[in-house]
Image 1 (cartoon, one colour):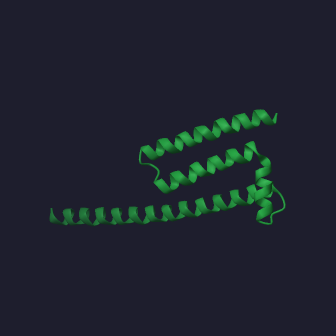
Image 2 (tube, rainbow, N blue to C red):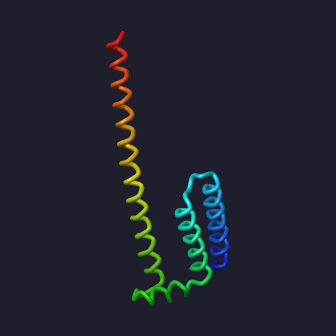
Image 3 (cartoon, rainbow, N blue to C red):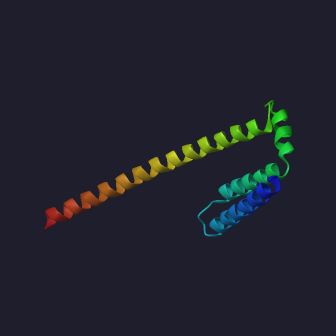
Length: 114
């Protein structure tokens, strides 16, 4: 059963790496994000193939089990990505507000000129 899970996960991770590379080539992903995601998926493959590696890293950081390390790291990554998304969303909202205001002012000027 573990071999099946490992095989399926590796296939999934390799497809994810391919998607990261494709998005990078299409200029939808910057170089820093590409490196981050490739390293993330490669680290995930290492942990799936050699679960004891997570335990050794957890021990180094003073965390009891490798599974705990994976949970803590996953939560940290999720919170960081949520923060980045929130910042981007706020920026987009400000940009949309500026464009709408500019369009409304231009339309108002045109209507007065007529």
